[in-house]
Image (cartoon, rainbow, N blue to C red; front, side):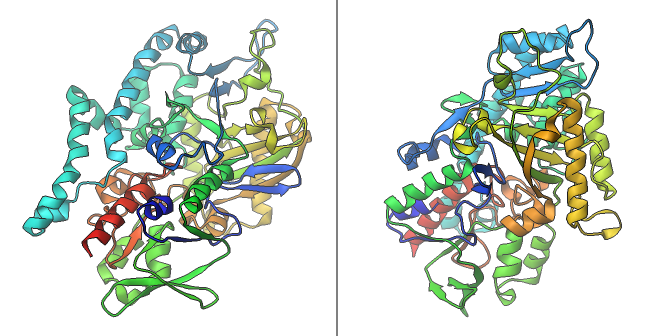
Amino acid sequence: MATYLQKAGVNTAVLEKRHVIGGAAVTEELIPGFKFSRASYVLSLLRPQIYKDLELKKHGLKIHIRNPSSFTPMLEDGVGRKPPRSLLMGNNMEETQKQIAQFSAKDAQSYAEYEAFINHMALSVEPLLDAVPVDVPSLTGGSLIQKIRSLHTLKPLIQAGFKLGRHIPQFYELLTAPISKILNHWFESEPLKATLATDGVIGAMISPQAAGSGYVLLHHVMGELEGIKGAWGYVEGGMGALSESIASAATDHGASIFTEKVVDSILVDCHGKAQGVVLQDGTEIRSKVVLSNATAHVTFLQLTPKESLSRDFIKEVSSIDYTSPVTKINVAVDRLPNFLAVPSNDGIPPSQRIAGTIHLNCEDMAYIKEAYEEACQGIPSTRPLLELCIPSILDPTIAPPACHVISIFTQYTPYYLQGGKEWDELERNRYADRVFDCIEQYAPGFKSSVIGRDVLTPPDLEKVFGLTGGNIFHGAMSLDQLYMTRPLPSYSNYRSPVKGLYLCGSGAHPGGGVMGSAGRNAACVVLSDLRRV
């Protein structure tokens, strides 16, 4: 966002609350020698146009693409001295189908068609990601000039419709149906369905049986790396290296970036126009426009003067769903986990097999549903859904020799525990111990390899990173909070009721993930508005 504004001649200052830039995309050395991607930890969704426009490779960005990309070990007894089965998936369709055939020959045949279907859906809606949503208020109630100006917002929607063509009914079903229904239509084997279902619930307080979980899956397959659709990778040096490359591009063009500058409030004049911000130390910084990368809740209910907003608007912002199921655990270990389900004679090095996402407790979609239902009662899942990533396998710069860092993305954990109890150190460690016990079942010896850990429950994610409710997407990615209703109906165009105040983070369209679209789109809207002043 800052780079786009600065390139267009708008002097831009970035104010970062923490000591390190990047929001949730940061690298922190919490244990000497171990560099953790403390919050976000994998990359795929960052828009290709942003790579190109900001010349991120020139500014030091290096990515390690994962292949295979997914490993799901089974918790079962091996047969005939063979290890337990596992499901290994990557970008080699033939090899992936061989893996699926262990569980179902029928599913192995169906998988290629399923992949083509999902990829077509994702490609069809791509035009919507890089554009402002349809401006319904201007089209329906604006002046003639406003109506003419807003006509261009229809173009991406029309493009998406043409790309979908005869598949519009299937797209509608994917958006609105439970992901369990979609996957049951295509497949019969539970390990495959549960593994794929994780993309439909990741970061969301929903189960695979929840309506609308199909869109969350679609959102997570929209990315690409190095021209490979759907690929995910690790940023060398951790996710903070991505933020640093973006910051380098911005400062190269003249933007100023300041850390440990806590914004206390947004300045609004008597005419309802943003005039700048006031820092916690009392310093006033004046500006023509203010762009907030914080959540809508923080931006409007904590930073903006209440008298500048209508009661109805405040009520609408207060109703945004920020429910989060996520607890992130960062772990330093002195050796790689030794999974029982890793074959010893199939020609794939064990470290390569587990370099992608490791899915645990994914033998059956029913396990995911049970974990969700416990959290709905205020109970951290007794058998949580776990996704492990070990980026140090591909990127040795983030851990000492022979040692590794592990990101464990876990759900489901409620914001408040049963009876309204808050998380404390005892409960935090009790849950982390439960997660480690689960991993130990799949990889005996894991617990003895642990050097240290960092546990971030939903309240911790809120406190450290400003993620309201601990929600990693700046608000639930439910159908009522997407596209022209994100963050609210009538304010999906990055503007706000306060003239000159814009939302440019994941709480705006197109939503969460390290994507960059909201910032780029917001910058375009700001530049358009400034040209009219």
